[in-house]
Length: 257
Image 1 (spheres, rainbow, N blue to C red):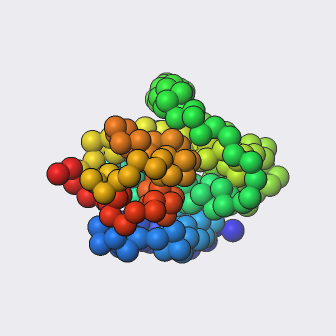
Image 2: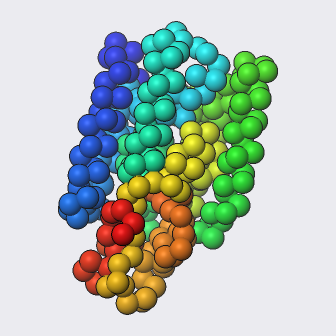
């Protein structure tokens, strides 16, 4: 399914433009889950058509120093990944939220009306993901092994069901209907860096004095990070909290006053 004749850089260009548009929508208070759905569909489609911009896989290739697969020189790839970490430090996890095809596919699956689980596993998920990153780094540097290939990330987006890894990643995607973004929360190596950046981001969803402490935003959050004191490291800017809030202006996307 992946179109090898189309430059994968097109996916990165899309990512840059999408970040700008989504940040603008959030900043001006115009973001809605309807807008998000459009970006999710386009992002998922780019995953299947171009296999880009799949940020966790790009990081894995950087670790392996596979410049041929990257399509650019290693310093350029490292710089590109660093730029999106900087974007997250400024504007939160917009890349994870609606732009990365891996996150987009899982977010779309979570729209299915099935019982939900794992909402309270966010602290544990962070530790698991850190451990997975150490394994990915060690096996990549020491053994030149691509673990994301082993779990079928590329095989899934290439629609290669004959390869065993396809089934593994398909299972992760199916699980995401009931457990919010299991790959992003428990496995994604790039997500570790983005979570650290998001915890210190300049712009994030914040409560104002208009908040009536009704708790509806906390109930709506799929990763249980909507409390006032949370750093929002695992906030994927899905918009469920702002949609559930009954008071206009009680939740805003902005800087700390």
